[in-house]
Length: 185
Image (tube, rainbow, N blue to C red):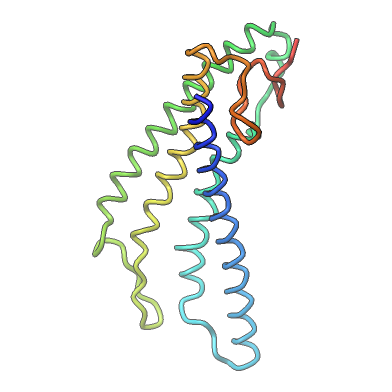
């Protein structure tokens, strides 16, 4: 289980790094476009389409699993803090199951949508350029798949008696280990 958690943590880190690289490339392209347009009246063709169809999709969907790994989702804990540690773990388990199911369902649906958009189905023409953006349809199911894999691994670990153990220094937290929103009573 710990090896699976480490692999998942590595995949989440890799997807986050790709998202960060997309932000950097997007900034460089926009700055270059503005500079070239204003200094030499020579803009980079199709910058707005490249930014919206390539960079923004990558930035928005690939790193989404990082919030699951860091337990950084928005939560309302008005009643939750009043529960005993046992009930808190039960509620977290139910939330993990629901999260995994919803994210997995979304990833499944988006995967088949991406297959439909394979070559020839999703192209954009701008400034005389033909931009193939069908590969980016696969970014969304990968992002949601990683997002759903986190709670799935956590539920599996709890079910196998790994309660309270972590998946290494960079792994996903489990109940029993204090973290944001989880009392260690």
